[in-house]
Image (cartoon, rainbow, N blue to C red; front, side, top):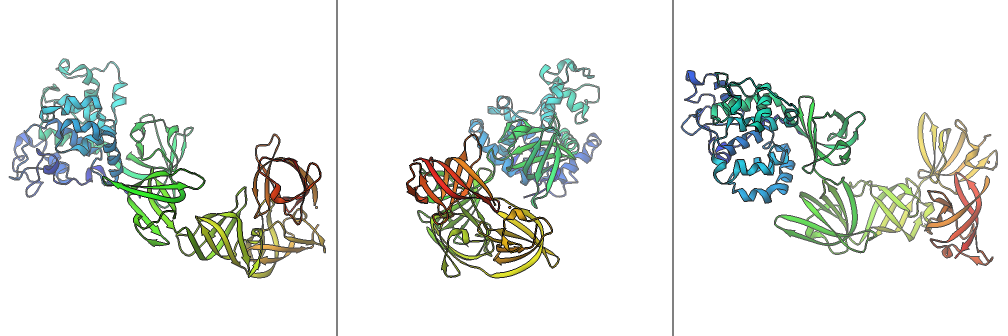
Length: 611
C-alpha cells in the first residue's frame, strides 16, 4: 500500500482532545481576535498557517492567546506531529512504538498524547532517560524552556548527530553563558537552520518559557525545512557498495533510493546498519524532498507462506492466533494473526471458526503476522485444473493453473503411492505432462490421486532453442510463432529414420513433433549421439512413483538423479542376488551403470554395494 502525505497536511483532530492548551478553534482560524495587534504581527502569518493546516488551534472564544506558555508535554506532542505521528501512513510505526514503550509510559500517568510520546521515543527523538525531565509528575505541565525546545527541534529534524559532531561551537548570543553546556550544540543547530532566533537584543534567553506565538513560528519553520513525506514499501535489495536501497511499489515496480551517513536505519525500532536490512519486508520510508531521512522496517522476518494441518485457534485481549502442525513437523507452531486477517475456506470467504481439526491451512505471513489463511478440508478434490509444471526432485510436486485464484499457481507434493489415470488408462506419474487437464485428490494437502486427460496433435517447425536437463525443453517456431514444449525422458526420437537422442539436434533443425498436451512424445527429424556412463555414491532420495533415485557421488556437493524402473533397470546386490526398486533405500551405497539419453541418466544396471 503506497500513500504519500505531507506532514504539514497530516490532519489532526481537535487539539483540545489531545492537547488541552491548544483547544478547538472557534470560527475562522485565520482571524483570531487577539493576534491583530502590532505586538504579534511577526507571528500572525505563522499562526494562521499552522492553524489552517491543523497543527495548532485556538480557543472557543475565538482567541489564540499568543502570550500563553506552552507546557513541556504540549511541545513534545506538537513536534511529534511535525515528525508524522498523526499521519495515517505511519500507523504501523505507531503500533510498534506502543508495543515497545507502553510498559514504560504507564509510569507517567499520561491522560492524553501517549501516541505522540511513544512515536518520539521510537524515532529516537526522546530517550527513556528524558522522560523524568519532561513528564515526571507535574513536570509535564511546566512550561517548555527555549533551550529545551532547541533540543527537541534538533532531534525532530534528524539533526542530533550532525549537531553533536560540531565541537567547539561558539554562539553569538550575549547570554551564551546562560545556555546549559549540554544544550549549546542544539541551540547552534536550531539557530543555523533558521528555526529559532534571538529575542531582539541578541540574547537567546534559554531559560525563558516558550510562548504559543513562538511555538507557531517554530512549527511552521520546522515543517517547511523538513518537508517530510512518508511511504510504505517493500525492501527488494540493499547494495552497500552503491549505498542504494531498492524497494517495490504496490505495482511491483522497483524504486531506488540513495542513503547517506545521516539516514537512520531501524529494524523494529532498533538502529541497525544498512547491510542488516531484511529483504522482502515492509518498511516505512521518510523522505525530505529527494533525501532519504530514515528507513523503518516493520518486521525482522521476511514475508513467507507456510502450510500445515490445523490444530486450534485462540483469541485474547483483541489478539488472535492460529496453531498448525507444519508439513514434516510433529509439534504444532503458533502464529499471531494480523488485525486485518482475511480467511478463505474451500474457495469461499469464511472465518477462523470455520476450520475443523486436521484441515490443511496455508498461511500468508506479512511483517511477522498472518495476513491471510486459505483452508481446505482433509480430503479435497480440485476439478478443472491444468498442470503448469511437474517438478522432479527427491520429492515430486505439481503446480497447477486454475480459474479460481485460491488454487491458481498452487504447488502440491505428490504421494509416493499416487494413483494416476490418463485418458481412462492407468499410467505412471511420469506420463503427466504440462498442459494436461486434471482432477486431483488431496489428502492432507498431498496429491494421492490424479485423473488426467490430454489432447494430441502434430506440429512441424524449426528448433529455436533446446535445453537438456532433468526437465528438458524445446522451443520451436511454427507458423511464425514460437512455442515451448516439455520433453519427457521417454520421448521417441527418430533421426534419419534411426533411433536418436536430443544431442543429435542443432538450432534451426527442422522437426516434426507429436504432442500430448504441452509435451513432446515423438520427434522425427532429418538431422546431422547415446553415450555410456556410470554414477557411484550414496542414495539421498527415492521417488518410486516417478522412478527417480538421487545419488550423491563421493566428493560432490549436489546429488545426481538416476531414472530407474523395474522393467528397464536390472537391480542386483553386491553378491549378485536379484533385487527390485523397492529394495533400494536412502543411505545405501550404489553403483549405477547406464546411458545418458535426452539429457538425463537412465540406469540400466544398479548394484547395491552396501545394504
